Image (cartoon, rainbow over all chains, first blue to last red; front, side, top):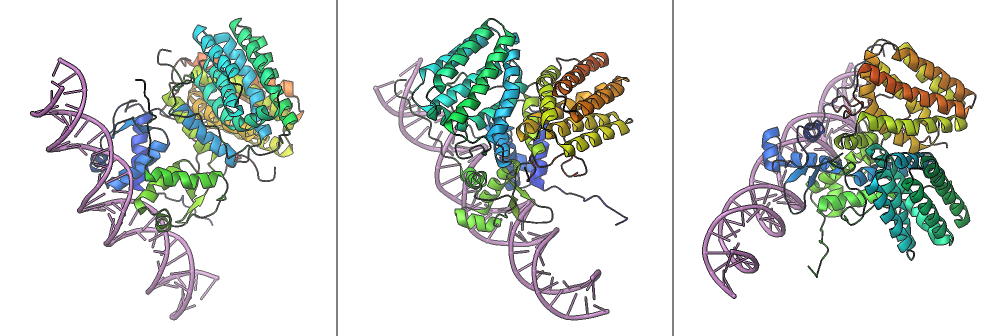
Length: 267
Length: 267
DNA sequence: GTTGCTTCTTTGTCCGACAATCATACGATC
DNA sequence: GATCGTATGATTGTCGGACAAAGAAGCAAC
C-alpha cells in the first residue's frame, strides 16, 4: 500500500446535466421564473437523450430548483420553497433517530432568542400577522390537530418577524417534528389550551411593547410548559419523534398568513 | 365565483413511485443498508416502464433516501447525509438573498447556546475531538481557505458534543454559508488567526471544566470578533453571501473528525 | 493465492413511438 | 364585442426495445 491513487469518479451524464443547469441557477445566470427550454431542446444542447435530460430534471425538481408553474408544461427556474426544504431536513432527522427531547431542547435554545430578536426588529405588519395567528389559534378549540397546527403557525409568524430567513428556515424543521407530539399533548391535557393561549397573549404584549427580555422569558416559559404538558400526557421524552404523521403544511394552500417566500422582495 | 372546486391533481407515475418507495423508507419498513431490487424488477412490481422507475430513483437519490454503495450497482436504502441535507438548505438560503448579517446574526443566537449545552453534556471523547480540531486549526496557518475550513470544523465538533442531531443539523448550513466570507476575512485580517486561536483555547478550557456560562461567554465573544474582523476586512454586512465558493465538506473524505452520522448508534 | 477467462446481471444511455394536455389561432355563435 | 368550439402544433408522460460498459460469480490455469 505504498502507491495510492485517488478513485477517479466519472459522474453519469444525468448528474452532470443536473449539475450544469443547477450551477447556472445557483449563480443566478438563470433567474427565478425564467422558463427552461423544452426537454428535446435541452437534449439537443447537451447532446444527450431526452431520457437523460428527464432524469436530470427530476433531480433539480426535487431540489426545488426548477418547478412547473400551474397550467404550464415548461419547467421554470424556482427558488426552493421553505417548507419543502425543511421537509427534507425533517426526514433526515427522523431517520437519524431524533427524540422528542432533542426537538424540545432545540426549541428551548432557539425560540427564546427568536422572540428576543423579533421583539427588537418587528414592524407593525408583523404585529398584525402575529395577532391574526394568535386569534386563529384561540378560535379553533375543537380539533387537536388543527390546534397544534395553529400553534406552529404562531411560531412561524414569530420567526418571520425577525426578518431573518436563516432563522425562519432553521426553525421550520423543528415545527414539523414538533407538531405530531404536540397534537397528542393538546388532546390529552385539557388545561394545555388555556396555558398556550395565555403565553400567546403575553408574547403579543411583549412584542407590541418591544420588550425583548419579556418576550424571551415568556417564550422560555411557553416552551417549558410544553415539557410539563408532555409529562402529564405521558409522552416519553426519549421516544423517537413520530414518523407517521409528520406535519407538512399544505404546499397548495396559500390561505395562511405563513410566508411562502423566505424574504419579501422589498426588503 | 360562487362555486369553487379544488384543483384535482393527478400526480405523474414517477412521483407516485418515488413516494411509495420513500414512504416505506421513512416508515422504516425498509431499513438502512437494505438493497433495493433492480430497476427492471421494480418496473415489474409497479407495472411501469423502467424509465419511469429511473426517474423516481433520481428523486429518491437526490433526497438522500437511496444511495449506491461504493462498488455496487444496486441501490441501497440510506439515511440522508447531514452535509448533503445542509447543502440543500444552503442553496435555498442563497437563492433567498441571505446576507452576511443574517448568517452572523443566526450564529450569534445559536452558537453561545450551543456552547453552553455542550459544556453541560460533553463527554471525554468529545473533549478529545475538540482538542484535535483546535490543534488542526492551530497547525494550519498558511492557507486561508484551509484555516476557514478548520474553524468550521471546530464548530462542527462542538455541535456534535451536544449529542443533539437537531442542533448539529441546524448549524451546518450556517457553517457552509459562513465559510467563504470567513476565508476572505482571515486572509485580510492578520490578527484574526491569533484571536481565533485564543477563543478556541478558552472554549476548550471552559468545556473541560464544564463551565457552561464561561463557554457561552467566550463563544459570544468569538462570534462578535468575527464581526469586527469583517469590518476591518471591509466586508459589507449587507452583501449577499457568496454563491461562488460555497463550502461543502468533501463528502468522500472520512479523514476528518467530523461526524458523518448525526447520532452514533450507541446512544 | 493470484491471474485470466467466461457468463450473467444490472445500469447508463440511446432510439423511436404515441396518447394526453396545454397554447394558440381562427372561426362560429350569441 | 365577448364567449365558445374547434383545429393545429408543441411538449410532456410513458412506453417498448436496444446495446455497451461494468460488477459479480464461477471456474480454470499458473
